[in-house]
Image (cartoon, rainbow over all chains, first blue to last red; front, side, top):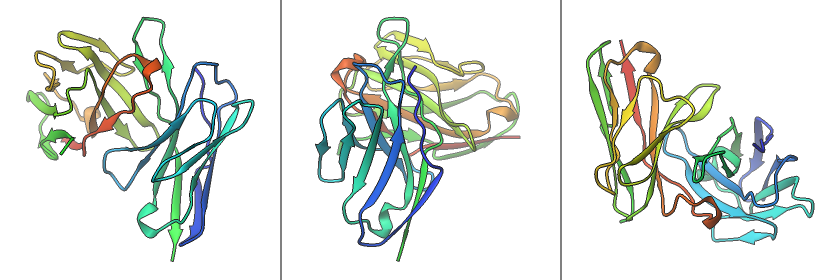
Length: 114
Length: 116
């Protein structure tokens, strides 16, 4: 299973772009990169996902390197409400057909500073 | 509003007293799953279900049971709770269990369980 590595914590000034890195050097060709975030102890919230190309939605942008071994989540104009733990996840399939294991690591704690 | 609803939000119980945490989704999702979250360990999958009457073990199934009699409901049952099951629990659902369709997971707001 491809695993991900993220820095444990980051700070970002309010109004600036927050860039959260993730390494997934063992990712295989058909595995997607997903980003979720968890505010305090609420349920994780889906942000964005991608396979090869860069992706953008109303919440964020996802930049995936050409070799797919790393990616960066960009929150273009961070607000205080973006303070959360951000999880980078590679979606894997197990040995049984349809075995859906979604392994969350410990993520990056992003703090937006006023 | 599309959502995953868990109940109760908070639960304190004693060792050995059977309990059920309910989970319901209104999005007609095929796939549902239970996770527990503990400090320093991230989210770990307990059980999952690919569709009605189809369930399977995740990474930490010991001490838990589930059932999927209807598409919308996926209750988590602790037949004889123990203190090491004190945790924050999340239910999640997804449109499809086929990982290649890249459908994201939608999570409930969690159930904080304390077993004394």
